[in-house]
Length: 166
Image 1 (cartoon, rainbow, N blue to C red):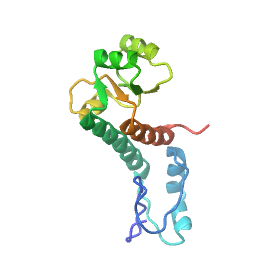
Image 2 (cartoon, rainbow, N blue to C red):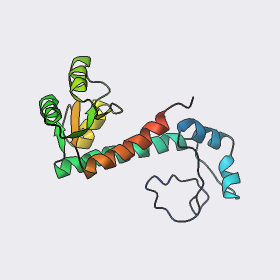
Image 3 (cartoon, helix red, strand yellow):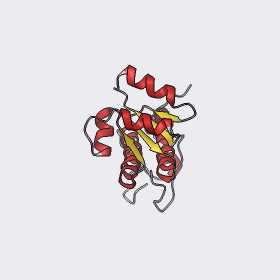
Image 4 (spheres, helix red, strand yellow):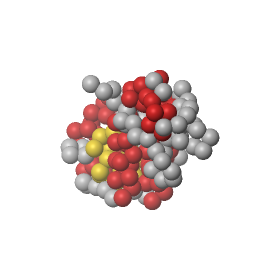
C-alpha cells in the first residue's frame, strides 16, 4: 500500500513496507478488490483501483517482454523461422516463442522440433515485435542461459495470473 492508502502491486518484489498477499490470479485479485478485502488485510483504509487486475496483468506482461528485450541485447535469441529452426536443430534452445497470431503451419513445424523445450504462445506478433525491435516477429527462440531463465520466471507469473481457476 502506498503512503496515501492506494493498493500498489509490487511486481519487482522490492517495495518496502508492509504488504498483503493475494493468490496470484486475476479472479482472486478481482474478488479482493470487489469485496474490499485489502482494507482488512492492511488493517487500515485502503483504496484498490477498479482496474488493479488489468494493471497487474499489463505489468507482468511488460516484465516478461522486457526479459525478451534483454535477451536480444545480449545476443541470446534467434528471430525468424529459419534462425529458430536452426537453433532448435542444434539443441541450443531453452524457450520457443510463437506469436499467438502466427500461422498454424510454421507453428506446427517448429513445435515438432521443440520436444522438451518450453513453448510459449502468450504474446501477439505486435507485442513480440515491439519488445524485440524488429517488425513481424512470429517465431523466436531463447538460447539456454540466464536470459531464458529470467523470461521463464516472468512468463510463468503472467501465465498463472491469466489462468482461470478451476
